[in-house]
Image (spheres, rainbow, N blue to C red):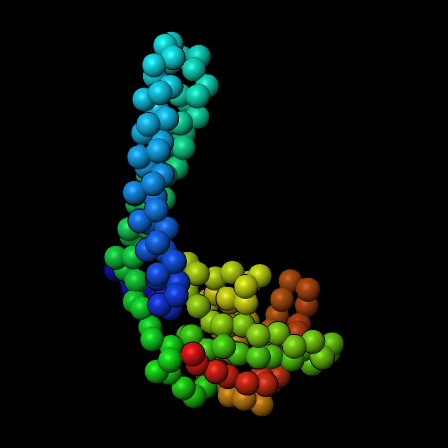
Length: 156
C-alpha cells in the first residue's frame, strides 16, 4: 500500500478526531439508539432512524481514519531545507496583481486552502516542487494561466 505523507500537526489532528469518535461520539450514538428503541415502533421512529444514520457515518469515518493513520508517513518538516518540497511554507507573489500568498505544502488529508494548507498534488504545488527562491512558476488554473514568483521558502 502507498504511504500517505503527512505533517506531525496533520497526523495529530486526525488521531485526535479518531479518539473523539471512539470515546465520545460512538458511545453517545449508542445511547441515543437505545433511548429511541424504548419509544416503541421502530418503523416510524424518526429519532431511531436519525441515530442509526449518525452511527453509520461515525463508523464509516472511524474506518477511514484508521486506514489513513495506518498508512501515514509522518514527515518532520523542521529537518528539511532547500528547494520546495513537501512541508515547505512558500510565500508567492502573483506577477499580475502583486498579491502575496503563503502556502504550506501538505498531504491530501490535511489540505485546507482557507488555512493556507495546499494539497501537494494540486497543480500549483506540483509546479512549485523543485523550485527555489526567486524562481517564477506558471500554473494553468480554471481562471487561466497564472504566474507567480517565489519570495521565500521556510521549513518549520
